[in-house]
Image 1 (cartoon, rainbow, N blue to C red):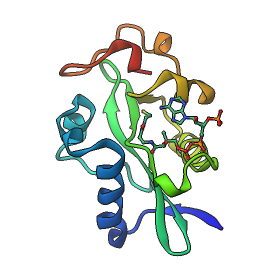
Image 2 (cartoon, rainbow, N blue to C red):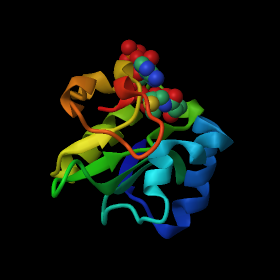
Image 3 (cartoon, rainbow, N blue to C red):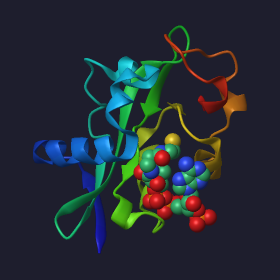
Image 4 (tube, rainbow, N blue to C red):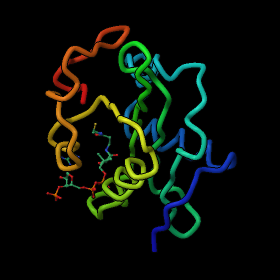
Length: 139
Ligand SMILES: CC(C)(COP(=O)(O)OP(=O)(O)OC[C@H]1O[C@@H](n2cnc3c(N)ncnc32)[C@H](O)[C@@H]1OP(=O)(O)O)[C@@H](O)C(=O)NCCC(=O)NCCS
């Protein structure tokens, strides 16, 4: 059985291994990663999926601004262990994060995946990120 809970300090090593597997070692060079650099995730908004005591998925939310004085949360990275994909864990983590987030939520990712949760590139309008980004992936 898979359970979703808040991340603990002791999950960090397994979470980083999961993210390395999912996104490769150049993941730190992405603009969204640079935005997260030096920040802590929003309190209570780091979630993990656990299967028999082992980390099967991770998602976190980060405080950002979406234009002057407009608070928002940046969702990501989301990753599910290859052995546990296509069982709805990514969707459950994403929906739990959206539900817990309460704010406007932004993310950089595949429209084909995130569209099902209501994210669209059209809704980010003129927003931009400090660095290189693909507008069609900013939702
Ligand atoms: C993307 C990811 C988090 C999805 O997790 P998951 O638990 O397997 O996802 P779910 O079970 O909720 O959903 C599976 C569905 O999403 C689809 N899907 C997975 N990744 C997708 C993508 N990048 N684009 C479009 N659809 C995708 C699957 O084909 C499957 O489709 P189906 O429901 O029609 O069979 C996981 O595959 C992962 O960690 N991938 C590596 C990182 C990555 O590629 N991220 C890209 C998104 S930005």
